[in-house]
Image (cartoon, rainbow, N blue to C red; front, side, top):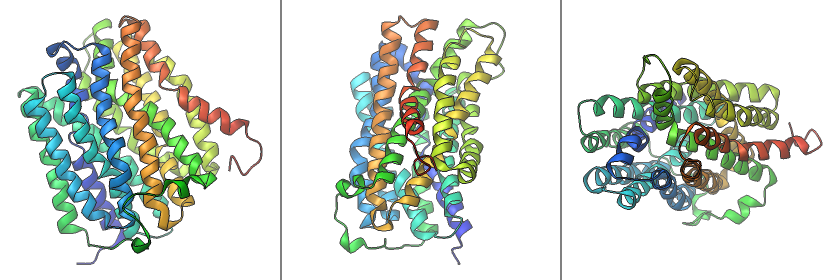
Length: 400
Protein backbone atom coordinates (compact mmCIF):
# COMPACT_ATOMS: atom_id res chain seq x y z
CA UNK A 1 0.00 0.00 0.00
CA UNK A 2 1.46 3.43 -0.92
CA UNK A 3 2.29 5.76 1.90
CA UNK A 4 1.36 9.21 0.62
CA UNK A 5 2.02 12.36 2.67
CA UNK A 6 -1.64 12.91 3.59
CA UNK A 7 -2.07 9.34 4.74
CA UNK A 8 1.05 9.50 6.88
CA UNK A 9 0.05 12.84 8.43
CA UNK A 10 -3.45 11.52 9.18
CA UNK A 11 -2.15 8.35 10.82
CA UNK A 12 0.48 10.12 12.88
CA UNK A 13 -2.03 12.72 14.09
CA UNK A 14 -4.55 10.00 15.00
CA UNK A 15 -1.90 8.08 16.92
CA UNK A 16 -0.81 11.23 18.75
CA UNK A 17 -4.37 11.97 19.90
CA UNK A 18 -4.89 8.38 21.10
CA UNK A 19 -1.55 8.34 22.93
CA UNK A 20 -2.78 11.28 25.03
CA UNK A 21 -5.95 9.78 26.56
CA UNK A 22 -4.31 9.91 29.99
CA UNK A 23 -3.01 13.46 29.59
CA UNK A 24 -5.92 15.20 31.33
CA UNK A 25 -7.00 12.38 33.63
CA UNK A 26 -5.58 14.02 36.73
CA UNK A 27 -6.79 17.56 35.89
CA UNK A 28 -10.27 16.11 35.23
CA UNK A 29 -10.38 14.59 38.73
CA UNK A 30 -8.26 17.24 40.47
CA UNK A 31 -11.07 18.67 42.60
CA UNK A 32 -12.23 15.19 43.66
CA UNK A 33 -8.74 13.88 44.42
CA UNK A 34 -7.71 17.07 46.21
CA UNK A 35 -10.58 16.51 48.67
CA UNK A 36 -10.17 12.72 48.82
CA UNK A 37 -6.48 12.88 49.71
CA UNK A 38 -6.68 16.09 51.76
CA UNK A 39 -4.17 17.93 49.56
CA UNK A 40 -3.39 21.63 49.73
CA UNK A 41 -3.28 23.74 46.59
CA UNK A 42 0.51 23.44 46.59
CA UNK A 43 0.36 19.63 46.81
CA UNK A 44 -2.30 19.45 44.09
CA UNK A 45 -0.13 21.64 41.87
CA UNK A 46 2.88 19.46 42.65
CA UNK A 47 1.04 16.37 41.38
CA UNK A 48 -0.06 18.20 38.24
CA UNK A 49 3.46 19.46 37.62
CA UNK A 50 4.98 16.01 38.19
CA UNK A 51 3.60 14.91 34.82
CA UNK A 52 5.72 17.56 33.11
CA UNK A 53 8.69 16.79 35.36
CA UNK A 54 8.65 13.22 34.07
CA UNK A 55 8.49 14.56 30.53
CA UNK A 56 11.36 16.94 31.21
CA UNK A 57 13.63 14.22 32.62
CA UNK A 58 12.93 11.72 29.83
CA UNK A 59 12.78 13.97 26.77
CA UNK A 60 16.54 14.58 26.28
CA UNK A 61 17.10 10.87 25.77
CA UNK A 62 13.82 9.77 24.16
CA UNK A 63 13.73 12.61 21.65
CA UNK A 64 17.49 12.98 21.23
CA UNK A 65 17.97 9.37 20.12
CA UNK A 66 15.62 9.92 17.16
CA UNK A 67 18.69 11.32 15.39
CA UNK A 68 20.07 7.77 15.67
CA UNK A 69 17.03 5.46 15.77
CA UNK A 70 13.79 5.42 13.82
CA UNK A 71 11.37 7.64 15.76
CA UNK A 72 8.70 5.00 15.12
CA UNK A 73 10.48 2.62 17.51
CA UNK A 74 10.76 5.26 20.22
CA UNK A 75 7.07 6.17 19.87
CA UNK A 76 5.88 2.58 20.25
CA UNK A 77 8.05 1.84 23.29
CA UNK A 78 6.95 5.08 24.95
CA UNK A 79 3.27 4.20 24.51
CA UNK A 80 3.84 1.23 26.83
CA UNK A 81 5.63 3.54 29.27
CA UNK A 82 2.52 5.74 29.36
CA UNK A 83 0.30 2.70 29.94
CA UNK A 84 2.45 1.67 32.92
CA UNK A 85 2.15 5.13 34.45
CA UNK A 86 -1.63 5.29 34.01
CA UNK A 87 -2.33 1.80 35.35
CA UNK A 88 0.05 2.43 38.27
CA UNK A 89 -1.69 5.73 39.07
CA UNK A 90 -5.08 4.00 39.11
CA UNK A 91 -3.92 1.06 41.23
CA UNK A 92 -1.45 2.56 43.69
CA UNK A 93 -1.83 6.36 43.95
CA UNK A 94 -3.12 7.22 47.42
CA UNK A 95 -1.71 10.68 48.07
CA UNK A 96 0.40 13.49 46.67
CA UNK A 97 3.73 11.64 46.50
CA UNK A 98 2.55 8.32 45.07
CA UNK A 99 0.31 10.17 42.61
CA UNK A 100 3.21 12.40 41.57
CA UNK A 101 5.45 9.38 40.94
CA UNK A 102 3.01 7.75 38.52
CA UNK A 103 2.14 11.07 36.91
CA UNK A 104 5.85 11.51 36.22
CA UNK A 105 6.01 8.06 34.61
CA UNK A 106 3.03 8.90 32.40
CA UNK A 107 4.69 12.19 31.47
CA UNK A 108 7.83 10.30 30.48
CA UNK A 109 5.65 8.30 28.11
CA UNK A 110 4.46 11.50 26.46
CA UNK A 111 8.10 12.58 26.13
CA UNK A 112 8.66 9.61 23.87
CA UNK A 113 5.52 10.10 21.77
CA UNK A 114 4.94 13.83 21.18
CA UNK A 115 8.22 15.09 19.70
CA UNK A 116 9.30 11.66 18.39
CA UNK A 117 5.92 11.53 16.64
CA UNK A 118 6.71 14.86 15.00
CA UNK A 119 10.17 13.56 14.07
CA UNK A 120 8.56 10.47 12.52
CA UNK A 121 6.35 12.75 10.45
CA UNK A 122 9.09 15.13 9.29
CA UNK A 123 11.40 12.21 8.43
CA UNK A 124 8.74 10.73 6.15
CA UNK A 125 7.06 13.85 4.76
CA UNK A 126 9.36 16.45 3.22
CA UNK A 127 7.55 18.84 0.92
CA UNK A 128 6.75 22.55 0.54
CA UNK A 129 3.68 21.85 2.70
CA UNK A 130 5.74 20.55 5.63
CA UNK A 131 5.08 23.66 7.74
CA UNK A 132 1.34 23.13 7.31
CA UNK A 133 1.61 19.46 8.21
CA UNK A 134 3.57 20.40 11.34
CA UNK A 135 0.76 22.80 12.25
CA UNK A 136 -1.77 19.98 11.88
CA UNK A 137 0.33 17.76 14.12
CA UNK A 138 0.89 20.30 16.89
CA UNK A 139 -2.78 21.31 16.77
CA UNK A 140 -3.72 17.66 17.29
CA UNK A 141 -2.25 17.98 20.79
CA UNK A 142 -5.35 20.01 21.63
CA UNK A 143 -7.59 17.29 20.19
CA UNK A 144 -5.80 14.75 22.37
CA UNK A 145 -6.32 16.96 25.42
CA UNK A 146 -10.01 17.42 24.66
CA UNK A 147 -10.45 13.69 23.99
CA UNK A 148 -8.86 12.93 27.35
CA UNK A 149 -11.11 15.41 29.15
CA UNK A 150 -14.28 14.22 27.43
CA UNK A 151 -13.56 10.54 28.09
CA UNK A 152 -12.57 11.19 31.71
CA UNK A 153 -15.66 13.31 32.30
CA UNK A 154 -18.09 10.88 30.69
CA UNK A 155 -16.60 7.72 32.15
CA UNK A 156 -16.26 9.39 35.53
CA UNK A 157 -20.02 9.87 35.73
CA UNK A 158 -20.57 6.12 36.11
CA UNK A 159 -17.16 4.68 37.04
CA UNK A 160 -14.78 5.36 39.93
CA UNK A 161 -11.84 7.59 39.03
CA UNK A 162 -9.39 4.68 39.29
CA UNK A 163 -11.37 2.51 36.86
CA UNK A 164 -11.70 5.45 34.48
CA UNK A 165 -7.95 6.01 34.38
CA UNK A 166 -7.38 2.30 33.72
CA UNK A 167 -9.81 2.36 30.79
CA UNK A 168 -8.07 5.44 29.39
CA UNK A 169 -4.84 3.42 29.19
CA UNK A 170 -6.27 1.70 26.11
CA UNK A 171 -5.54 4.85 24.08
CA UNK A 172 -1.73 4.56 24.05
CA UNK A 173 -2.04 0.85 23.18
CA UNK A 174 -4.09 1.72 20.09
CA UNK A 175 -1.57 4.42 19.17
CA UNK A 176 1.26 1.87 19.31
CA UNK A 177 -0.68 -0.47 17.02
CA UNK A 178 -1.19 2.31 14.46
CA UNK A 179 2.53 3.09 14.35
CA UNK A 180 3.52 -0.57 14.14
CA UNK A 181 1.01 -1.62 11.48
CA UNK A 182 0.42 1.45 9.36
CA UNK A 183 3.65 3.48 9.42
CA UNK A 184 6.57 2.33 7.28
CA UNK A 185 9.95 1.91 9.00
CA UNK A 186 12.52 4.53 8.06
CA UNK A 187 16.03 5.12 9.36
CA UNK A 188 16.71 8.76 10.28
CA UNK A 189 19.08 10.87 8.22
CA UNK A 190 22.76 10.89 9.36
CA UNK A 191 21.96 8.62 12.30
CA UNK A 192 25.48 7.17 12.23
CA UNK A 193 26.97 10.52 13.16
CA UNK A 194 24.65 10.96 16.13
CA UNK A 195 25.17 9.75 19.67
CA UNK A 196 22.73 8.31 22.17
CA UNK A 197 22.46 11.64 23.99
CA UNK A 198 21.66 14.93 22.25
CA UNK A 199 24.42 17.51 21.77
CA UNK A 200 22.77 20.60 23.19
CA UNK A 201 25.89 22.73 22.81
CA UNK A 202 25.67 22.60 19.02
CA UNK A 203 22.00 23.55 19.18
CA UNK A 204 22.54 26.49 21.52
CA UNK A 205 25.16 27.97 19.23
CA UNK A 206 22.40 28.80 16.74
CA UNK A 207 20.73 32.09 17.61
CA UNK A 208 17.55 31.48 15.63
CA UNK A 209 17.05 28.06 17.20
CA UNK A 210 17.64 29.52 20.69
CA UNK A 211 14.95 32.13 20.10
CA UNK A 212 12.30 29.54 19.33
CA UNK A 213 13.36 27.34 22.24
CA UNK A 214 13.00 30.21 24.71
CA UNK A 215 9.69 31.19 23.15
CA UNK A 216 8.40 27.66 23.58
CA UNK A 217 9.38 27.72 27.24
CA UNK A 218 7.25 30.83 27.74
CA UNK A 219 4.41 29.29 25.74
CA UNK A 220 4.41 26.06 27.76
CA UNK A 221 4.50 27.90 31.09
CA UNK A 222 1.21 29.50 30.12
CA UNK A 223 -0.41 26.60 28.29
CA UNK A 224 0.29 23.78 30.73
CA UNK A 225 -0.32 25.93 33.79
CA UNK A 226 -3.73 26.75 32.31
CA UNK A 227 -4.54 23.18 31.24
CA UNK A 228 -3.56 21.75 34.62
CA UNK A 229 -5.98 24.00 36.50
CA UNK A 230 -8.67 24.75 33.88
CA UNK A 231 -11.26 22.24 35.09
CA UNK A 232 -10.77 23.31 38.71
CA UNK A 233 -11.01 27.01 37.72
CA UNK A 234 -14.26 26.45 35.83
CA UNK A 235 -15.69 24.48 38.76
CA UNK A 236 -14.72 27.34 41.08
CA UNK A 237 -16.40 29.85 38.77
CA UNK A 238 -19.55 27.73 38.64
CA UNK A 239 -19.67 27.74 42.43
CA UNK A 240 -19.71 31.56 42.46
CA UNK A 241 -22.02 32.27 39.55
CA UNK A 242 -25.77 32.17 39.13
CA UNK A 243 -27.81 30.06 36.76
CA UNK A 244 -27.42 26.47 35.63
CA UNK A 245 -24.45 25.88 33.28
CA UNK A 246 -25.17 23.86 30.14
CA UNK A 247 -21.84 22.05 30.35
CA UNK A 248 -20.00 20.34 33.18
CA UNK A 249 -16.56 21.67 34.07
CA UNK A 250 -14.81 18.86 32.16
CA UNK A 251 -17.08 19.28 29.12
CA UNK A 252 -16.49 23.03 29.08
CA UNK A 253 -12.72 22.55 29.36
CA UNK A 254 -12.81 19.98 26.54
CA UNK A 255 -14.77 22.34 24.29
CA UNK A 256 -12.36 25.18 24.98
CA UNK A 257 -9.37 22.96 24.26
CA UNK A 258 -10.82 22.06 20.87
CA UNK A 259 -10.50 25.73 19.91
CA UNK A 260 -6.75 25.18 19.97
CA UNK A 261 -6.94 23.26 16.68
CA UNK A 262 -8.08 26.14 14.43
CA UNK A 263 -6.20 28.70 16.51
CA UNK A 264 -2.88 26.89 16.06
CA UNK A 265 -3.34 26.11 12.35
CA UNK A 266 -4.64 29.56 11.38
CA UNK A 267 -2.00 31.17 13.58
CA UNK A 268 0.72 29.38 11.62
CA UNK A 269 -0.83 30.54 8.33
CA UNK A 270 -0.92 34.13 9.62
CA UNK A 271 2.67 33.87 10.80
CA UNK A 272 3.75 32.82 7.33
CA UNK A 273 2.23 35.98 5.88
CA UNK A 274 3.01 38.54 8.60
CA UNK A 275 6.41 37.29 9.78
CA UNK A 276 6.79 34.43 12.22
CA UNK A 277 8.49 36.19 15.14
CA UNK A 278 6.41 39.34 14.73
CA UNK A 279 3.24 37.24 14.93
CA UNK A 280 4.42 35.28 17.97
CA UNK A 281 5.41 38.43 19.83
CA UNK A 282 2.03 40.06 19.17
CA UNK A 283 0.10 36.97 20.24
CA UNK A 284 2.10 36.62 23.45
CA UNK A 285 1.43 40.25 24.31
CA UNK A 286 -2.30 39.74 23.79
CA UNK A 287 -2.30 36.58 25.94
CA UNK A 288 -0.36 38.38 28.70
CA UNK A 289 -3.25 40.85 28.98
CA UNK A 290 -6.09 38.38 28.53
CA UNK A 291 -4.87 36.06 31.32
CA UNK A 292 -5.71 38.75 33.90
CA UNK A 293 -9.13 39.35 32.41
CA UNK A 294 -9.88 35.63 32.40
CA UNK A 295 -8.65 35.17 35.96
CA UNK A 296 -10.90 37.85 37.38
CA UNK A 297 -13.90 36.69 35.35
CA UNK A 298 -14.50 33.80 37.76
CA UNK A 299 -17.28 35.68 39.57
CA UNK A 300 -18.97 36.74 36.32
CA UNK A 301 -21.98 34.84 34.93
CA UNK A 302 -20.88 31.36 33.94
CA UNK A 303 -21.34 31.93 30.20
CA UNK A 304 -19.28 35.13 30.28
CA UNK A 305 -16.53 33.45 32.28
CA UNK A 306 -16.33 30.64 29.70
CA UNK A 307 -16.34 33.12 26.81
CA UNK A 308 -13.44 35.13 28.23
CA UNK A 309 -11.54 31.95 29.11
CA UNK A 310 -12.06 30.65 25.57
CA UNK A 311 -10.77 33.88 24.01
CA UNK A 312 -7.72 33.72 26.27
CA UNK A 313 -7.07 30.09 25.32
CA UNK A 314 -7.26 30.95 21.61
CA UNK A 315 -4.58 33.61 22.18
CA UNK A 316 -2.40 31.09 24.02
CA UNK A 317 -2.67 28.57 21.18
CA UNK A 318 -2.30 31.02 18.29
CA UNK A 319 1.51 30.81 18.42
CA UNK A 320 1.89 27.08 19.16
CA UNK A 321 2.37 25.71 15.66
CA UNK A 322 4.32 28.83 14.63
CA UNK A 323 6.95 28.16 17.27
CA UNK A 324 7.39 24.48 16.34
CA UNK A 325 7.36 25.10 12.58
CA UNK A 326 9.90 27.88 13.10
CA UNK A 327 12.20 25.57 15.04
CA UNK A 328 12.09 22.88 12.34
CA UNK A 329 12.61 25.50 9.63
CA UNK A 330 15.78 27.02 11.11
CA UNK A 331 17.40 23.83 12.45
CA UNK A 332 19.63 21.64 10.21
CA UNK A 333 18.10 18.15 9.66
CA UNK A 334 20.99 16.39 11.38
CA UNK A 335 20.34 18.35 14.60
CA UNK A 336 16.55 18.32 14.66
CA UNK A 337 16.30 15.50 17.17
CA UNK A 338 18.62 17.32 19.59
CA UNK A 339 16.87 20.63 18.97
CA UNK A 340 13.44 19.08 19.57
CA UNK A 341 14.77 17.47 22.75
CA UNK A 342 16.02 20.79 24.14
CA UNK A 343 12.87 22.54 22.92
CA UNK A 344 10.72 20.05 24.83
CA UNK A 345 13.04 19.99 27.84
CA UNK A 346 12.66 23.72 28.43
CA UNK A 347 9.00 23.83 27.43
CA UNK A 348 7.82 20.97 29.60
CA UNK A 349 10.19 22.01 32.36
CA UNK A 350 8.22 25.25 32.46
CA UNK A 351 5.09 23.08 32.40
CA UNK A 352 6.32 21.36 35.56
CA UNK A 353 6.89 24.59 37.48
CA UNK A 354 3.83 26.55 36.32
CA UNK A 355 1.10 24.35 37.94
CA UNK A 356 3.10 24.31 41.18
CA UNK A 357 3.43 28.11 41.24
CA UNK A 358 -0.27 28.35 40.44
CA UNK A 359 -1.11 26.19 43.47
CA UNK A 360 1.22 28.16 45.76
CA UNK A 361 -0.51 31.40 44.77
CA UNK A 362 -3.89 29.87 45.56
CA UNK A 363 -2.69 28.83 49.03
CA UNK A 364 -1.00 32.14 49.83
CA UNK A 365 -3.96 34.22 48.63
CA UNK A 366 -6.43 31.92 50.43
CA UNK A 367 -8.18 30.37 47.44
CA UNK A 368 -10.72 33.13 46.79
CA UNK A 369 -11.56 35.09 43.63
CA UNK A 370 -8.46 37.27 44.13
CA UNK A 371 -6.27 34.18 44.42
CA UNK A 372 -7.58 32.70 41.16
CA UNK A 373 -7.17 36.05 39.40
CA UNK A 374 -3.55 36.35 40.53
CA UNK A 375 -2.81 32.72 39.69
CA UNK A 376 -4.08 33.02 36.11
CA UNK A 377 -2.33 36.37 35.77
CA UNK A 378 0.99 34.72 36.61
CA UNK A 379 0.71 32.51 33.53
CA UNK A 380 1.37 35.35 31.09
CA UNK A 381 4.54 36.73 32.66
CA UNK A 382 7.13 34.74 30.70
CA UNK A 383 5.37 35.35 27.39
CA UNK A 384 5.28 39.04 28.17
CA UNK A 385 9.03 39.03 28.81
CA UNK A 386 9.78 37.15 25.56
CA UNK A 387 7.61 39.43 23.43
CA UNK A 388 8.90 42.63 25.00
CA UNK A 389 12.47 41.51 24.31
CA UNK A 390 11.62 40.78 20.68
CA UNK A 391 9.84 44.11 20.22
CA UNK A 392 12.72 45.96 21.87
CA UNK A 393 15.21 44.50 19.41
CA UNK A 394 15.78 46.62 16.34
CA UNK A 395 16.07 45.49 12.76
CA UNK A 396 13.87 43.49 10.46
CA UNK A 397 16.00 40.38 10.97
CA UNK A 398 14.71 40.12 14.52
CA UNK A 399 11.00 40.54 13.82
CA UNK A 400 10.77 39.00 10.41
